[in-house]
Length: 223
Image (cartoon, one colour):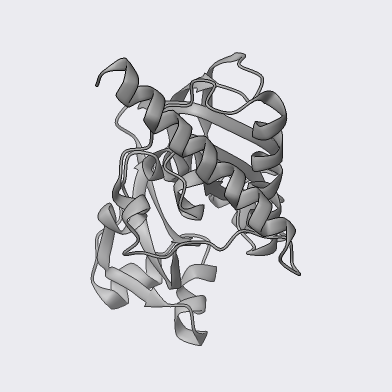
């Protein structure tokens, strides 16, 4: 890509981001529409963030993404999910009420945070299988075997480097959102025999601390 091509691309990304923020400000709910599976942005490799937005513009975009995530509600939202192919994601998890579920899934509350140009690498071969869903794939959940522990690298919203190990459910969220930035949906990694509509029966499978009964009944393996 030539310098002029790169400049044109970055200008288009900035313009897109500013239009998202401006449009949200005129909506009654103040949110951005979440794009659904089939939208091209969900299958594109996101462009690395490299100062396409000023600090003020970036803060406004991230605030919009965070509001949209919370309202959905969800525990993570990547910029491609609002149609913007830029390598940004917001995360926040209030946790779960059940101590049993929290223990089995290693799901502890996660304070709000931002990932810029994130990457992850597994620490070992250990994987854990649980149901998960996606704000861009409404009405369904499926079991995904994900790395239990990963090394997360990238930057935060202030440009400070990230290099840390995350485990359990936080590692699952990091992998899910980072995958979005590579054009990958959770269904690409799911046990498709586990796919369940988010109705009464599907909710029953998803509510089990570990999907043992679902695995036996629906016929998919568990790691």
